[in-house]
Image (cartoon, rainbow over all chains, first blue to last red):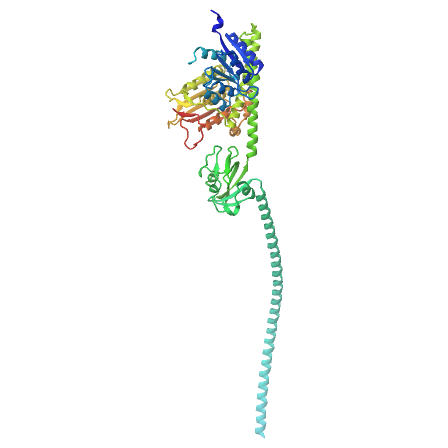
Length: 134
Length: 450
C-alpha cells in the first residue's frame, strides 16, 4: 500500500515566513502533506486546483483585504464544496468578537500561537482528524 | 407841736425801720445775686463741656461712617472677587443646602450641563442632574455621593470610579467629582461638589490601552517564532543537541515564555480597560479548579519549604463560571502568597460556600512580608508595587492584584485583605453565584449558578 494514501493534506494559510517554515517542518515530520498560502485569495486558488484538502490551518490577519474570517465565511457556505473541511485557527489575535465569530461559523479549534507549543497544536490537529467527534 | 413832733418822730422811726428792712432785703438780694452768678458760671462751664463732647461725638461718628464705608467696599470687593473666582473656575461647581437643594452654581456648571442658575436654584441636585455608571445604569438616590456626604460621610472623591452626568438635553459626558460637606459649628449645613468633564482623559486612556493591546499583539508574533524554533531545536527536529546546547536552549525557551506571560498580562489589562474581556461560562467544579492551581504552585511551595494547608469543602455545587478568569484570580492570589512569603513560612487556603449559599468564599493567608500600612490603599493600583518587596522579587509587574480585583468586581464580587508588615497578609474573595439583578444589561458576571 502506498503510504502516501494515508497522508492527509493540510493547507496552511499564514504570512509570517519563519512561522510558515516551522509549521511546515513540524507538520511534515508528522506525516502531513503541506501546502502553504500567504493570502486568502491564494488559498482559494489552491483549494480550487488541488481539490483534496483534508484540513486548513489558518491565521487571522493576512496580507490583502481579506482576513481569515472572510475566508471561513466563504468556506462554510453550505452550498460550497468545502463546508466540511475542518478549520483550525492559529492566531495571535484573540479579540472576543473574532473568537466568537469564528466559533459561530463552525471552525474546529481556535488557539493562540504564543500560548501553545507547536507540537501541541499539531497533536491537537492530528487527534481531531483521527477522532473528529472528540 | 408836741404832737407834731411826736408824729414826726414816729414817722422817722418807721422810715428807719423801713430803711433797715430795705437794707436787709438788699443784702439778701445781693446774696441771691451772688448765688445766681455762681450757678450761671457753672452752667456756662457745663454748656462749654457739652459743646466739646458734641464736637468729639461728631468727629467719632464721621470716622465710624468712613470706616463702615471702607469696610463695606472691602467686603464688596472680596465678594466680587470670590464670585469672579467661583464663576470662572474651569470645573463645574455646585453648592447645596442640607436638603440637597441647589443654592449656587457656577458658570462652568451652566456650560457643562446646559442648565441656567435661575432654572434650578432651590431644586434638588440629585433630581436635576441624574448620574449613570459606566454601563449606563442610573445611580440611585441613596448611592449618590452627594446623599452620602449630606448624611455624614466625611469626604468623597470619585476620581477612580468615573461615571456619566446627564445634561439638560439628555446627552451625557464622563465625569469625575469630589464632594465635601460644608460644616458650620460642627453641623453639616450643606455640601460642595466640584466636577470635571473627563472625555479627553478617557480618550487618551483608551488610545493608550489600544496601543498596549496592538503592541502586545505585534510582540506575540516574534515571540511565537522564538518559542516554536527553540522548541523544535530542543525536540531534535534539526538534529541532535548536546547537553550544554540543550541547557542554553532551555534558558532561551524559559526566558521567552516569561516574555509571553508578560505580554499576556498586559493584554489582560488592556482588555479589562477596553471592556473586551471574553467571558466564556461553563459548568465549573471550583474545588477541582482550586486544587489544580495549588498543584501548579506546588513546586515553588516545596522549593521554599513553605508549610501549606488547605481546607476545601467537598460538596460545592457546580457553578457556571469562566474557569479561565476564575483561575486567574486564584492563581494571582496564591502565587503572590508564595512569592512574598520567606522560606519555611506558612500559607493557608480556604474554600467554602458562603452562609447565605449565594456566594463562594475563598481566603488565602500567609506569614509573609506583608504590605506596609501606608501603602495598603495603593495595593490594587495598576503597576504599583510595595517598597518592601521590590528588592525581594524582581519578576512582579504590579498588575496581578489589579487584574484580580477587576475580574472579581466585574463579576459582582468583592476582594479585600488585611496585612501587617513582616507578619503576613490575608486576602478574601467573595464571588456571587447569581448575577445581581440591579445591574441589568450588564453581562459581565462570570459566575452564575447552574
